Amino acid sequence: MKKLTLSALVLTALFGANAHANNTITFLGEVSDQTCEVAINGATANPTVLLPTVSTADLAAAGSVAGETPFTLSVSGCTINATQALPIKTVFVGNSVTAAGNLGNTGTATNVSLQILDAVGGNAVDLTGVATVDGLNVAAGDSTASHDFAVQYYAEGAATAGTVVSSVQYAISYL
Image 1 (tube, one colour):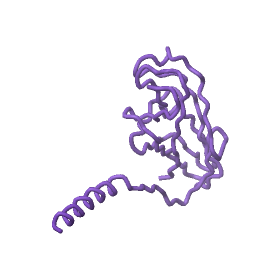
Image 2 (cartoon, one colour):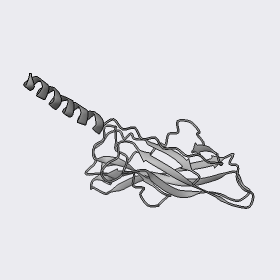
Image 3 (cartoon, helix red, strand yellow):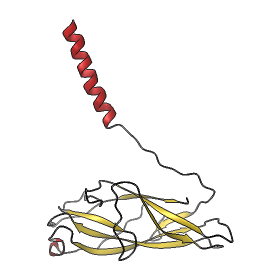
Image 4 (tube, one colour):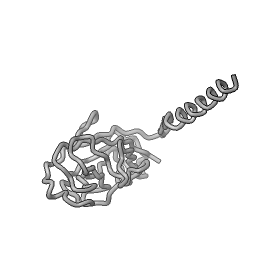
């Protein structure tokens, strides 16, 4: 009887520890007196950014980048103070993020990820956590603004030929 009880306790401890390790859902939100309609390259639902096809030679060494492609995040319909500008931050949360802080590839090419840049020709956005990026600023008395970000291929090693597919979640923050 003691062996059965001990076995049950050990199994409960193992399953209990495992259940607590991977069952966390994090919710992020914000309450604001400001709201705006958000679009990516003019699309308000399910936006897609198409990158150019690049050669494996362009991504032959770890850290190589190629195919920088701009995309525009815009806001419209904002209700703001007529005398005060509204700075807006863009919040990115990566899916399948690499150790280098880039978006992992779920396509067939290997050793390649996608790197988000804070502006065209700008700096890489580290997606290992929630990334908050400046750039949008609705001028006083205006109701629209836009900011050009960019995305590019990033070699995690010598890239092989294949498809590159990834995604990032985004939101805007008025705080």
